[in-house]
Amino acid sequence: MTLSFTIHSLLLGFATIVALGCAPSATNPPPTANTPSIPAAPNDALVQFSVLAALAADDYTDGAPLRDVLAAGDFGLGTFDRLDGEMILLDGKMFQALADGTVRPANLGGTTPFAAVTFFKDDGRRDELSAATLTHLEEQIDRQLPRRNSPYALRITGEFTEVTLRSVPAQSPPFRPLVEVVRDQVTWQHRSVRGTLIGLRCPAWMGTLNVSGYHWHFLSDDQKIGGHVLACQFEHATLRYDDCSSVDIRIPQSTNFDQFDIRHVTQQDVEQIERQRSTSPKD
Ligand SMILES: [Zn+2]
Image 1 (spheres, rainbow, N blue to C red):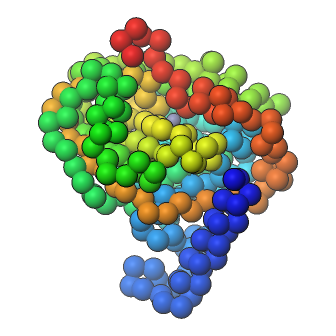
Image 2 (cartoon, helix red, strand yellow):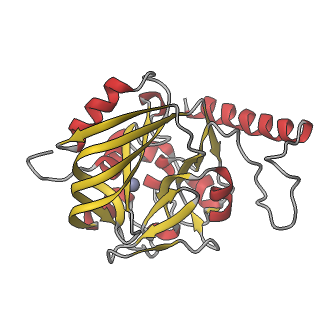
């Protein structure tokens, strides 16, 4: 599946290049010395930089320039070079939630070994959404979203009664597998904080390309609290969702990526990495 998907994504990338070459539009000006080297994807695509399985296999360096990520979307999530914190992309601004609990605007001169972004536009919404746990939230969204096998970008804004977040510290070589790194994750719990959940729901067919199922990051309205979400509780929030009609995978050209071997990564490893939940009995 990976091989066929890779070929498909190459074709998608080629199609994008051809489309841009044939029909430059007002929203895609001709490249200049300051524009990213990678062409923009169609606005409705979920654009991935690398695949999660490569991250799980400790490919943490030599990733994509953050400016290329910003050129491919205004909404999404990921990590940074050497796993230095959690990436939050919201309204075209990129933030880095560090393992010391602080959040800062990302240094756009950096790179990422894994990110997934899109240009968010509403395909639907639901007001007055309440959830006692992440699982409760996801069950409700499963019932709401029209398509089971399409990726969705999800945005939930409101007052959070409680949110439990994690981040991981920057790693040094020799790198350990990600499943070991996340055992050292740092977690925080916040109460009564206004903010946004930045989420993706990827269908099961995406396998180890991304997290199958839900993946949530959080950013408070004051941009001081953020991270990967392990648990949350809220009332009267608003959900907006964006149905992504294609997946565009940007294949890293690094030696590290070329040496990654999918046989060393299990689905279970990938699930433990990003879907690890709070140990709270509530969730
Ligand atoms: Zn995450």
